[in-house]
Amino acid sequence: MANRPNILWYCTDQQRFDTIGALGNPYVQTPTLDKLVEAGVSFTHTYCQSPICTPSRSSFMTGLYPSRLHNTRNGNESFPGFPPVISKLIAESGYDCGMIGKFHLQSSGYRTEPRLDDGFSYWRFSHAPRDDWKEGHHYAEWVRSLGGNLNELRNRPERVPPEFHQTTWASECAIEFLKNKRDENTPWFLNISIYDPHPPFIPPKEYADRFDPSAMPGPYFQESDLAQQKRLSALDFQDEIRTPEEHDARQKQADYYAMIAQIDDQFARILQYLDETGQRENTVIIFTSDHGESLGDHGLMYKGCRFYEGLVRVPLIFQWAGHYEENIQSDALVELLDLTATLLDISGIEQPEYMQGKSLIPIVTGQSDAQHHRDFVRSEYFDALDPHFTGGTGTFGTMYRNRRYKLCVYHDKDLGELYDLQTDPWEFCDLWNSTEHEQIKHQLIYESFNAHVTLTTDMGSTRIAPM
Image (cartoon, rainbow, N blue to C red):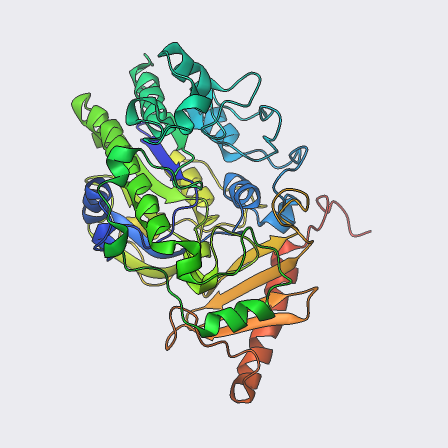
């Protein structure tokens, strides 16, 4: 395992796939990410395994579907004892591991999230940019050490300035970790998990001023969406069904893009430090997010039980100069839990049999076809939102997407959706009740059910004998 690379894994929270300039969005300001795209491999069709934080993060931290892991909800009291999170496996293989920011594999409501046997030697916790945790919230302590008060700063008209911002704090911590003295044969693994661009959409004023709401393109919305969402209104969601005007969607889009612009600037600081210290040449850079954001699409804001592209499709970029392909945009179907297998592959660790991901290293190194990885991808929503605080009603839904079609089934509501993404990439024409598409719908339901049974059933302990 000599000469294994360092790994810098930067994970945002609730960032859609279509928020990077070099990948086709002319309205954002992402020069750092644009350079990463040009120097690396971007997977443009990466799907999270749940459109909600905890199940999605649990999935890519273990390599299992949320239902297979039995961790499908936000706000859960504890985390399963098995399997270990991948940072533990990476640490045991000899890496010095650090975590900065949000972890969210268990509830962090009214308490600091309890530590797991996670393998991190460096731990700087901040679930969200507020100061309502009694202890263990490093970001709030950092703000106080600078003479600030988070709760006061958040309520100012100019909002939290960059010098006090959680995204800035994360960069400060990252540089602190990178300055740590290590044996020259000890590689490091750093997971930076910031809160932005998660709502509320409150970027610092100096970033907000860069984006004119009237110049924003607005959400993907048609008047027919109102009737469609009324049909689906029994399903969990965090906000009410509204028109873009009622959502003030262009203003929210401008603020969302402003938050991403600040992320881009702070990400640049970390990469610059790697360059200045000569560490970048032996460091794999990974950029992704845990799930997307509706941002007004189809009359919806925030997240919940839907599987539209903006909500379940996320950025995923790899870069390692001289080792990985450059300026490759792969439209292969990828699941975010494939990142788990890829991280182990990078670390030189054999993937455990129980893991369900499939390494992307053959694609990023140019050894296999960049346009095919999986025949289908899945996402799940199983009673994920709290009924008392975030609009949960106990909804259960699954998404099955192959190259052309997307099927969504809401199992306890007698509801479903079917889209032909080849002719309708933004999912305006629901074919669920189309007699012309009845045969393909039944075929996809059959395939989706088979995938669910075979991929999410826990078979229990290892077989040791014929009886």
